[in-house]
Image 1 (cartoon, rainbow, N blue to C red):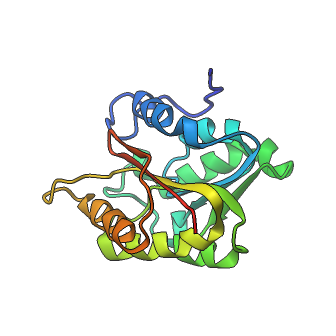
Image 2 (cartoon, rainbow, N blue to C red; image 1 turned 90 degrees about the vertical axis):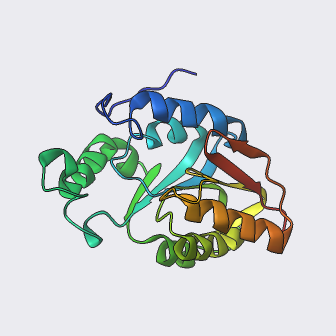
Length: 196
């Protein structure tokens, strides 16, 4: 499936490169369906939504952006949160005006709490990565996903030295509590089938 990718194709940042996004997409694509109502939580600079929106009737793009900080790391132009937020609004302007994309500058749990239960077909979670935060996000997400839908995410890293190891711990905690099946566990991508 060819993607109309309108964001800059960054090649120097391994975790944010176009090729990395395309690779992540290929792993989760079988779980996205068609004409879905989905949410990407943890949007960063916005490019991954280009892949997700092909599968949605409505796509929520959720990130605290400027509620969190004005820069990611050093105060360099490429780290400007304001610039990234404006870019997301600009690139998705037509879809926002048509109601197909909803840009939500908020933290994950308050956003999820604002939705009706079983509102979403899937969620792609790539937010905090800290164990406690990720556990709260997953717990808040589960009732918002329709039965048979998917909670998908990035950075499932079993290495205890990794900054993303909290995701691994939180996902495994939820599996042990709820007994969910994990149909996706590949290249740091994970997915749980929501059946309760």
